[in-house]
Image (cartoon, rainbow, N blue to C red):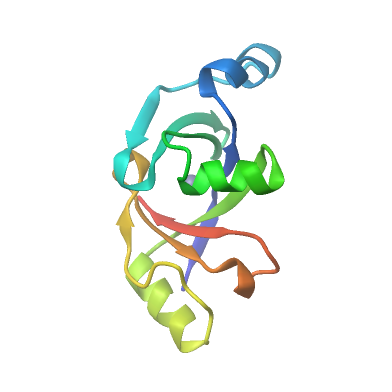
Amino acid sequence: MKILKIDHLGIAVSSIDGKKNFWTDALGLNLEGTETIEAQNVTTAFLPVGESEIELLESTSTDGPVARFIEKKGEGIQHVAFRVENIEDALAELKEKGIALIDKTPRMGAGGAKIAFLHPKATSGVLVELCER
Ligand code: ZN
């Protein structure tokens, strides 16, 4: 498995519109538009930071994964995403190493990326996303 870089940090917010000002006005990052992923009950907004990005996540339902995260832990970093060269190979290798996976096969994420999540029980409580673009 080859990890190319930290692709993005996913940050759960109660409202992208309500919370974007810190990122755009105070830090001067550029919000490149939003995208709703219906299957994951989430709207995402990407803000490039050099080679990586910040991904703001707003739940579109009261019981989606982002809503449950905020209910349990409050707003904050929800996941770390590593860009891999080949996500199918990476998942196969991790499975062989006995790492618990949430997604055994990749699904479509924002921006047409192939993504998969590893189980936090395997990662010291950090939700890890693999993505391939
Ligand atoms: Zn993500």
